[in-house]
Length: 313
Image (cartoon, rainbow, N blue to C red; front, top):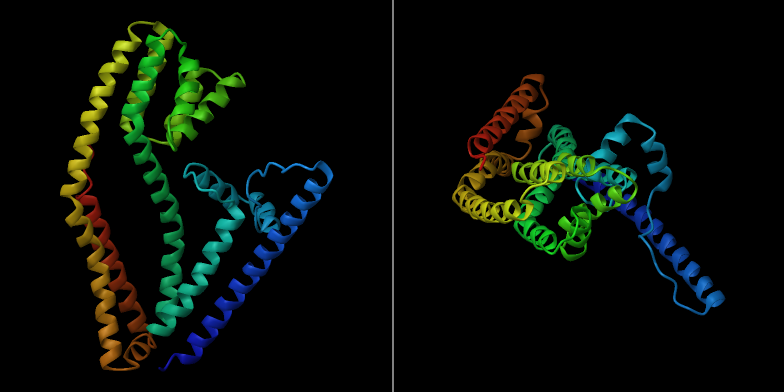
Protein backbone atom coordinates (compact mmCIF):
# COMPACT_ATOMS: atom_id res chain seq x y z
CA UNK A 1 0.00 0.00 0.00
CA UNK A 2 1.46 3.34 -1.09
CA UNK A 3 -0.08 5.25 1.82
CA UNK A 4 1.06 2.87 4.55
CA UNK A 5 3.15 5.54 6.39
CA UNK A 6 0.20 7.94 6.40
CA UNK A 7 -2.13 5.21 7.65
CA UNK A 8 0.38 4.31 10.39
CA UNK A 9 0.66 7.95 11.50
CA UNK A 10 -3.13 8.32 11.48
CA UNK A 11 -3.72 5.18 13.54
CA UNK A 12 -0.98 6.23 15.97
CA UNK A 13 -2.48 9.70 16.45
CA UNK A 14 -5.99 8.29 16.82
CA UNK A 15 -4.73 5.76 19.37
CA UNK A 16 -3.03 8.55 21.32
CA UNK A 17 -6.23 10.61 21.35
CA UNK A 18 -8.28 7.62 22.50
CA UNK A 19 -5.64 6.84 25.12
CA UNK A 20 -5.79 10.38 26.52
CA UNK A 21 -9.60 10.24 26.59
CA UNK A 22 -9.46 6.83 28.30
CA UNK A 23 -7.04 8.04 30.98
CA UNK A 24 -9.22 11.12 31.53
CA UNK A 25 -12.37 9.03 31.90
CA UNK A 26 -10.62 6.57 34.22
CA UNK A 27 -9.26 9.30 36.48
CA UNK A 28 -12.63 11.05 36.59
CA UNK A 29 -14.39 7.79 37.48
CA UNK A 30 -11.81 6.99 40.14
CA UNK A 31 -12.21 10.44 41.70
CA UNK A 32 -16.00 10.11 41.68
CA UNK A 33 -15.79 6.68 43.29
CA UNK A 34 -13.52 8.01 46.02
CA UNK A 35 -15.96 10.86 46.62
CA UNK A 36 -18.82 8.40 47.01
CA UNK A 37 -16.77 6.30 49.43
CA UNK A 38 -15.96 9.39 51.51
CA UNK A 39 -19.60 10.42 51.67
CA UNK A 40 -20.71 6.94 52.69
CA UNK A 41 -18.06 6.76 55.40
CA UNK A 42 -19.33 10.03 56.91
CA UNK A 43 -23.08 9.50 56.57
CA UNK A 44 -23.38 5.72 56.57
CA UNK A 45 -25.94 5.98 53.75
CA UNK A 46 -25.77 5.64 50.01
CA UNK A 47 -25.62 9.13 48.50
CA UNK A 48 -27.81 10.20 45.66
CA UNK A 49 -25.84 10.38 42.45
CA UNK A 50 -26.83 13.30 40.23
CA UNK A 51 -25.94 14.00 36.65
CA UNK A 52 -22.94 12.34 35.08
CA UNK A 53 -19.52 13.89 35.50
CA UNK A 54 -18.71 16.23 32.64
CA UNK A 55 -15.55 15.78 30.63
CA UNK A 56 -13.23 18.42 29.20
CA UNK A 57 -14.55 21.09 31.56
CA UNK A 58 -11.64 23.45 30.87
CA UNK A 59 -12.23 23.42 27.13
CA UNK A 60 -15.96 23.69 27.67
CA UNK A 61 -15.58 26.74 29.91
CA UNK A 62 -13.40 28.55 27.36
CA UNK A 63 -15.59 27.53 24.42
CA UNK A 64 -18.80 28.85 26.00
CA UNK A 65 -17.31 32.37 26.01
CA UNK A 66 -16.96 32.36 22.23
CA UNK A 67 -19.56 32.86 19.53
CA UNK A 68 -18.97 29.34 18.20
CA UNK A 69 -19.53 27.84 21.64
CA UNK A 70 -22.78 29.74 22.11
CA UNK A 71 -24.09 28.56 18.74
CA UNK A 72 -23.15 24.97 19.57
CA UNK A 73 -24.85 25.26 22.96
CA UNK A 74 -28.08 26.52 21.38
CA UNK A 75 -28.10 23.69 18.86
CA UNK A 76 -27.44 21.03 21.49
CA UNK A 77 -30.17 22.45 23.75
CA UNK A 78 -32.89 21.62 21.21
CA UNK A 79 -31.62 18.12 20.42
CA UNK A 80 -32.02 16.59 23.88
CA UNK A 81 -28.46 15.22 23.79
CA UNK A 82 -26.60 14.92 27.09
CA UNK A 83 -23.54 16.74 25.80
CA UNK A 84 -21.69 19.93 26.60
CA UNK A 85 -20.24 22.19 23.86
CA UNK A 86 -16.73 21.17 24.94
CA UNK A 87 -17.48 17.46 24.66
CA UNK A 88 -19.13 17.94 21.28
CA UNK A 89 -16.15 19.96 20.03
CA UNK A 90 -13.60 17.34 21.13
CA UNK A 91 -15.60 14.46 19.66
CA UNK A 92 -16.00 16.24 16.32
CA UNK A 93 -12.31 17.16 16.26
CA UNK A 94 -11.30 13.56 16.94
CA UNK A 95 -13.69 12.40 14.22
CA UNK A 96 -12.18 14.86 11.72
CA UNK A 97 -8.68 13.56 12.47
CA UNK A 98 -9.84 9.99 12.01
CA UNK A 99 -11.57 10.84 8.72
CA UNK A 100 -8.51 12.64 7.39
CA UNK A 101 -6.03 9.87 8.07
CA UNK A 102 -8.27 6.90 7.21
CA UNK A 103 -9.71 8.35 3.98
CA UNK A 104 -6.32 9.78 3.04
CA UNK A 105 -4.71 6.37 3.47
CA UNK A 106 -7.40 4.46 1.57
CA UNK A 107 -7.75 6.90 -1.34
CA UNK A 108 -5.23 9.78 -1.41
CA UNK A 109 -4.19 12.59 0.98
CA UNK A 110 -6.27 15.11 -0.99
CA UNK A 111 -9.39 13.01 -0.38
CA UNK A 112 -8.58 13.13 3.33
CA UNK A 113 -8.81 16.91 3.22
CA UNK A 114 -12.17 16.70 1.42
CA UNK A 115 -13.39 14.14 3.98
CA UNK A 116 -12.40 16.43 6.86
CA UNK A 117 -14.28 19.34 5.25
CA UNK A 118 -17.27 17.08 4.75
CA UNK A 119 -16.98 16.04 8.39
CA UNK A 120 -17.40 19.66 9.46
CA UNK A 121 -20.71 19.75 7.61
CA UNK A 122 -21.57 16.32 9.00
CA UNK A 123 -21.14 17.47 12.59
CA UNK A 124 -23.65 20.27 12.08
CA UNK A 125 -25.94 17.98 10.07
CA UNK A 126 -25.90 15.48 12.95
CA UNK A 127 -27.29 18.09 15.35
CA UNK A 128 -29.95 19.10 12.83
CA UNK A 129 -30.87 15.45 12.33
CA UNK A 130 -31.19 14.95 16.08
CA UNK A 131 -33.45 17.98 16.29
CA UNK A 132 -35.68 16.68 13.47
CA UNK A 133 -35.72 13.23 15.05
CA UNK A 134 -36.75 14.66 18.42
CA UNK A 135 -39.43 16.81 16.77
CA UNK A 136 -40.90 13.83 14.94
CA UNK A 137 -40.92 11.78 18.14
CA UNK A 138 -42.74 14.63 19.89
CA UNK A 139 -45.27 14.88 17.03
CA UNK A 140 -46.01 11.16 17.36
CA UNK A 141 -46.85 11.76 21.04
CA UNK A 142 -49.18 14.70 20.36
CA UNK A 143 -52.38 12.58 20.10
CA UNK A 144 -51.63 11.08 23.51
CA UNK A 145 -50.77 14.52 24.88
CA UNK A 146 -54.02 16.08 23.72
CA UNK A 147 -55.94 13.12 25.14
CA UNK A 148 -54.32 13.59 28.56
CA UNK A 149 -55.02 17.35 28.48
CA UNK A 150 -58.64 16.77 27.46
CA UNK A 151 -59.20 14.28 30.28
CA UNK A 152 -57.57 16.56 32.84
CA UNK A 153 -59.55 19.65 31.81
CA UNK A 154 -62.76 17.63 31.68
CA UNK A 155 -62.07 16.61 35.27
CA UNK A 156 -62.00 20.30 36.25
CA UNK A 157 -58.25 20.87 36.43
CA UNK A 158 -56.68 24.11 35.27
CA UNK A 159 -54.54 24.08 32.14
CA UNK A 160 -51.33 24.65 34.14
CA UNK A 161 -52.11 21.64 36.34
CA UNK A 162 -53.03 19.59 33.28
CA UNK A 163 -49.64 20.34 31.71
CA UNK A 164 -47.83 19.27 34.90
CA UNK A 165 -49.83 16.04 34.93
CA UNK A 166 -49.00 15.39 31.27
CA UNK A 167 -45.30 15.97 31.98
CA UNK A 168 -45.41 13.28 34.68
CA UNK A 169 -47.35 10.72 32.66
CA UNK A 170 -45.78 10.98 29.18
CA UNK A 171 -42.46 9.51 28.13
CA UNK A 172 -39.62 11.53 26.67
CA UNK A 173 -39.31 13.70 24.67
CA UNK A 174 -42.83 14.96 25.46
CA UNK A 175 -42.40 14.51 29.20
CA UNK A 176 -39.08 16.37 29.25
CA UNK A 177 -40.33 19.24 27.10
CA UNK A 178 -43.54 19.64 29.10
CA UNK A 179 -41.50 19.59 32.29
CA UNK A 180 -39.59 22.60 30.95
CA UNK A 181 -42.92 24.31 30.32
CA UNK A 182 -44.08 23.45 33.84
CA UNK A 183 -40.84 24.80 35.33
CA UNK A 184 -41.25 28.06 33.41
CA UNK A 185 -44.83 28.40 34.62
CA UNK A 186 -43.69 27.74 38.20
CA UNK A 187 -41.25 30.67 38.13
CA UNK A 188 -43.81 33.15 36.80
CA UNK A 189 -43.78 32.84 33.02
CA UNK A 190 -47.11 33.20 31.27
CA UNK A 191 -48.72 30.30 29.49
CA UNK A 192 -48.34 32.09 26.15
CA UNK A 193 -44.57 32.57 26.58
CA UNK A 194 -43.91 29.04 27.86
CA UNK A 195 -45.85 27.37 25.06
CA UNK A 196 -44.37 29.77 22.51
CA UNK A 197 -40.84 28.73 23.47
CA UNK A 198 -41.90 25.10 23.17
CA UNK A 199 -43.10 25.73 19.61
CA UNK A 200 -39.79 27.45 18.79
CA UNK A 201 -37.72 24.56 20.15
CA UNK A 202 -39.70 21.92 18.21
CA UNK A 203 -41.13 23.64 15.13
CA UNK A 204 -44.00 21.74 13.50
CA UNK A 205 -47.46 22.50 12.15
CA UNK A 206 -49.16 20.12 14.56
CA UNK A 207 -47.53 21.69 17.61
CA UNK A 208 -48.37 25.19 16.39
CA UNK A 209 -52.05 24.18 16.09
CA UNK A 210 -52.01 22.71 19.60
CA UNK A 211 -50.29 25.75 21.10
CA UNK A 212 -52.71 28.11 19.35
CA UNK A 213 -55.68 26.10 20.64
CA UNK A 214 -54.41 26.14 24.22
CA UNK A 215 -53.51 29.84 24.15
CA UNK A 216 -56.86 30.90 22.67
CA UNK A 217 -58.73 28.71 25.14
CA UNK A 218 -56.83 30.23 28.07
CA UNK A 219 -57.54 33.75 26.84
CA UNK A 220 -61.15 33.55 25.66
CA UNK A 221 -62.41 30.42 27.35
CA UNK A 222 -64.81 28.19 25.41
CA UNK A 223 -65.17 24.47 24.88
CA UNK A 224 -61.55 23.52 25.39
CA UNK A 225 -62.42 19.85 26.00
CA UNK A 226 -64.31 19.59 22.72
CA UNK A 227 -61.49 21.33 20.86
CA UNK A 228 -58.91 18.96 22.32
CA UNK A 229 -61.03 15.92 21.49
CA UNK A 230 -61.39 17.02 17.88
CA UNK A 231 -57.69 17.86 17.72
CA UNK A 232 -56.82 14.39 19.01
CA UNK A 233 -58.74 12.74 16.17
CA UNK A 234 -57.11 15.04 13.61
CA UNK A 235 -53.62 14.36 14.93
CA UNK A 236 -54.23 10.60 14.84
CA UNK A 237 -55.21 10.85 11.16
CA UNK A 238 -52.18 13.02 10.35
CA UNK A 239 -49.93 10.57 12.16
CA UNK A 240 -51.13 7.71 9.97
CA UNK A 241 -50.81 9.83 6.83
CA UNK A 242 -47.24 10.80 7.70
CA UNK A 243 -46.35 7.15 8.26
CA UNK A 244 -47.78 6.14 4.86
CA UNK A 245 -45.96 8.95 3.05
CA UNK A 246 -42.67 8.07 4.75
CA UNK A 247 -43.06 4.43 3.69
CA UNK A 248 -43.79 5.39 0.08
CA UNK A 249 -40.71 7.65 -0.10
CA UNK A 250 -38.27 5.21 1.50
CA UNK A 251 -37.02 3.98 -1.90
CA UNK A 252 -36.22 7.55 -2.98
CA UNK A 253 -34.29 8.12 0.26
CA UNK A 254 -32.18 5.04 -0.47
CA UNK A 255 -31.53 6.30 -4.00
CA UNK A 256 -30.29 9.62 -2.63
CA UNK A 257 -27.71 7.76 -0.52
CA UNK A 258 -26.75 5.38 -3.34
CA UNK A 259 -25.75 8.20 -5.71
CA UNK A 260 -22.64 9.41 -3.76
CA UNK A 261 -21.79 5.88 -2.61
CA UNK A 262 -21.53 4.76 -6.23
CA UNK A 263 -18.99 7.51 -6.87
CA UNK A 264 -16.86 6.36 -3.94
CA UNK A 265 -17.15 2.78 -5.16
CA UNK A 266 -15.85 3.76 -8.59
CA UNK A 267 -12.88 5.50 -6.99
CA UNK A 268 -12.05 2.36 -5.02
CA UNK A 269 -12.25 0.28 -8.19
CA UNK A 270 -9.92 2.66 -10.03
CA UNK A 271 -7.41 2.63 -7.18
CA UNK A 272 -7.59 -1.17 -6.92
CA UNK A 273 -7.03 -1.81 -10.64
CA UNK A 274 -4.34 0.88 -11.00
CA UNK A 275 -2.52 1.44 -7.68
CA UNK A 276 -1.42 5.02 -7.21
CA UNK A 277 -3.82 6.39 -9.85
CA UNK A 278 -5.64 8.61 -7.35
CA UNK A 279 -2.35 10.02 -6.06
CA UNK A 280 -1.34 10.95 -9.59
CA UNK A 281 -4.78 12.38 -10.35
CA UNK A 282 -4.87 14.62 -7.28
CA UNK A 283 -1.20 15.53 -7.55
CA UNK A 284 -1.94 18.20 -10.17
CA UNK A 285 -4.11 21.27 -9.80
CA UNK A 286 -6.36 20.26 -12.69
CA UNK A 287 -7.02 16.87 -11.11
CA UNK A 288 -7.84 18.45 -7.75
CA UNK A 289 -10.24 20.89 -9.41
CA UNK A 290 -11.93 18.06 -11.28
CA UNK A 291 -12.26 16.05 -8.07
CA UNK A 292 -13.85 18.99 -6.26
CA UNK A 293 -16.28 19.57 -9.15
CA UNK A 294 -17.21 15.87 -9.23
CA UNK A 295 -17.92 15.76 -5.50
CA UNK A 296 -19.89 19.00 -5.79
CA UNK A 297 -22.06 17.46 -8.52
CA UNK A 298 -22.64 14.34 -6.44
CA UNK A 299 -23.64 16.55 -3.51
CA UNK A 300 -26.02 18.56 -5.70
CA UNK A 301 -27.61 15.34 -6.92
CA UNK A 302 -28.02 14.10 -3.36
CA UNK A 303 -29.68 17.30 -2.16
CA UNK A 304 -31.91 17.59 -5.24
CA UNK A 305 -33.22 14.05 -4.78
CA UNK A 306 -33.84 14.70 -1.09
CA UNK A 307 -35.53 18.00 -1.92
CA UNK A 308 -37.85 16.51 -4.53
CA UNK A 309 -38.84 13.70 -2.15
CA UNK A 310 -39.70 16.07 0.70
CA UNK A 311 -43.47 16.26 1.06
CA UNK A 312 -45.06 18.43 3.72
CA UNK A 313 -48.07 16.68 5.25
